Image 1: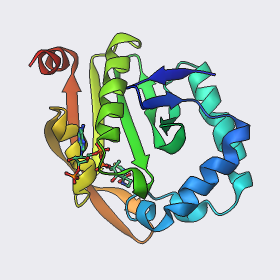
Image 2: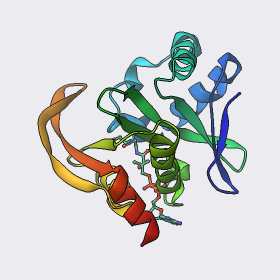
Image 3: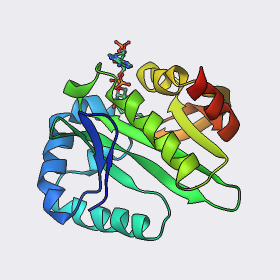
Image 4: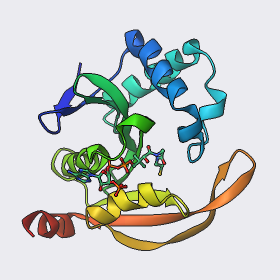
Length: 184
Ligand SMILES: CC(C)(COP(=O)(O)OP(=O)(O)OC[C@H]1O[C@@H](n2cnc3c(N)ncnc32)[C@H](O)[C@@H]1OP(=O)(O)O)[C@@H](O)C(=O)NCCC(=O)NCCS
């Protein structure tokens, strides 16, 4: 199974069907924290619902269309991050992520996203990486801001969250900008 080392303590790992119970437990244990910004949380109420999703994620990786990976922190599943899809025509992708509440505040996601941006430019040979964050989600916005992404604009009512729309801030990073960020 694909595993990508991020730091000594952090790695990204594709999940298989045997991981469904652990994934369910991690999401279930952070339900209130995650549902504040992620629209899919309330609908995931049974372990069995993860089967087809894990299958789709593995297919996405096999199709070289990006991947969704479990974030392993000191051997424990701490969250998820990955590429939504890869647009080879325009050489771009976008990144999504979440952490269980108890793994926040350690810099884990900033390291993971930095590693995913490296992966996008080096392995997929892309030109642009995008991250979209909800307007009020300051913790999420801080991740691309810490890494030097440019705030490019706002998509009004860009996402429907349970019972309302919210605006999305678009952050972008280009390949040459990333090289400069890494040098400074
Ligand atoms: C968005 C989310 C992943 C951010 O988590 P996070 O822990 O704040 O982000 P990081 O793992 O990068 O950690 C940064 C925090 O660790 C601290 N930190 C400690 N060591 C650090 C290091 N070596 N490098 C960077 N930050 C470090 C930072 O100061 C920061 O803490 P602060 O918010 O108190 O200033 C998390 O809040 C989450 O999952 N939210 C719910 C789902 C969600 O919103 N997903 C995004 C949808 S767009």
